[in-house]
Length: 168
Image 1 (tube, one colour):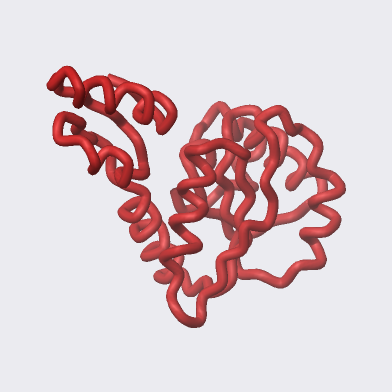
Image 2 (cartoon, helix red, strand yellow):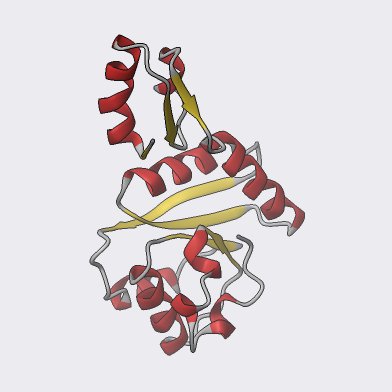
């Protein structure tokens, strides 16, 4: 069993060569589909993004900005959302930050000037907490949607008002 693209890319060819079943969790199944002995057990990114976009559409959002950590998982998810938008919708990969990022003040000053319907957060623990705390400090309240951390209770402790009603 392996989780993530890099492990999948390294192990799948070996499992195929040795005719050994290999199970992997990876949101982009295109690589695994090349190997008959590799089995995926996570929804692919298209399914994740289509479900999220359905919720976004139900809420009437047309233009959304996406903030993500720079890693393969979040890059794939954000790319899936952008790829699956329909005519009349705009998804913008607005900000990509390293997992160690904790200072969003300059970015939030720029964000205040943007016109959009909702903000998508695809962040890791720590980065998520830093962003929601600074959204609160700047008294910025936006309709939110996003990855797992948007709904993590501990990650948003003290800032529930920022993430209340978020689509995850």
